[in-house]
Length: 196
Image (cartoon, rainbow, N blue to C red; front, side, top):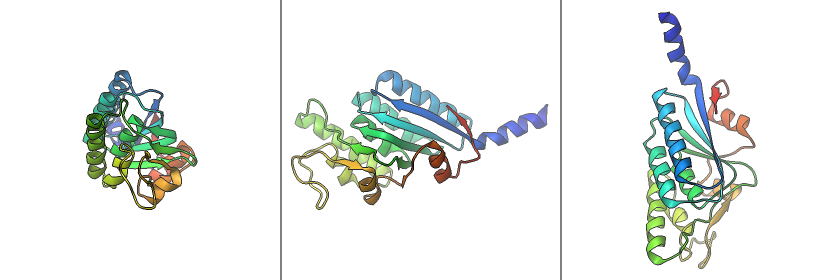
């Protein structure tokens, strides 16, 4: 029995968890992601891929998710299949690696209501998350605050929303890949057992 146990522990390195972040960011989705992250970390999986298709949702839930992603000991990949808007952008920026599908986009995170206090709070969360993951905090801020200007990218009175190619150019996408197989290949996880 012992050798079998040893083998199964060894194999956990070759396990990749995939979590679908599809639709509105809610407390239930936050609890689900945190649970999966804890499990993947406990099992010392090779990594966890979030497949993201969201227009956003609750800021408090997104911040809980962000905290769990940042705290993860295993690599977390944000794979933006179509869109990572608003709260979805924050979760993506928290990941170690951002991979975007061709034609996908990330950003447009102006809070509702867009009062100065809310904008300051959310843009602070975006900036600090970008700093932690080695991405340009000014670009993160421009996703939230319409007064932020980035020469050659966005003028005043607009909220930044990056296409996959723009995100690649500005360090907000590490790779552009079409589909999960390609994502696994880019990450060097082609031989991994995928757990959805």
